[in-house]
Length: 135
Image 1 (cartoon, rainbow, N blue to C red):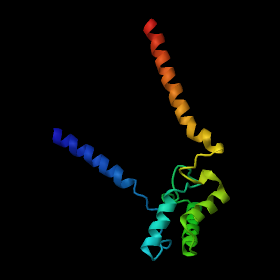
Image 2 (image 1 turned 180 degrees about the vertical axis):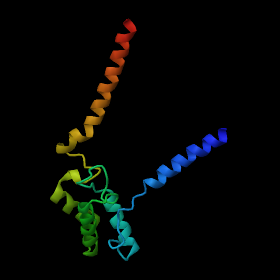
Image 3 (image 1 turned 45 degrees about the vertical axis):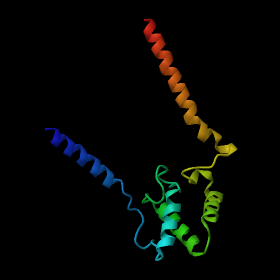
Image 4 (image 1 turned 90 degrees about the vertical axis):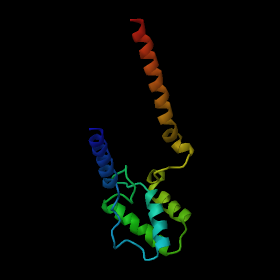
């Protein structure tokens, strides 16, 4: 019985793992040079899809994501380095396009709000528990 449960759980995890593999990059986008393609994929994994907003352009099937992937590959072909490509994209779309935006004055809330909400949540839980213990 334990063996069957283990096999079912392992199957579920395997199916979940295999279903999350992104296949958004189309064969006509792939660069001939493997090193350049690896660079393009690494950059694409750090750029947010402006349509999906929870996916990188490497994972997204949106037309804008495809256009951005092609744009990145063209910039790589033109000899631009990663920093120049990131600067071009952030100048055009702002810091929001980066999945990991830099820590700046205008992004400080983006970085600190999760911590603030966590502290408020812990406070509410502790306060609620103290209140319910008195009853």
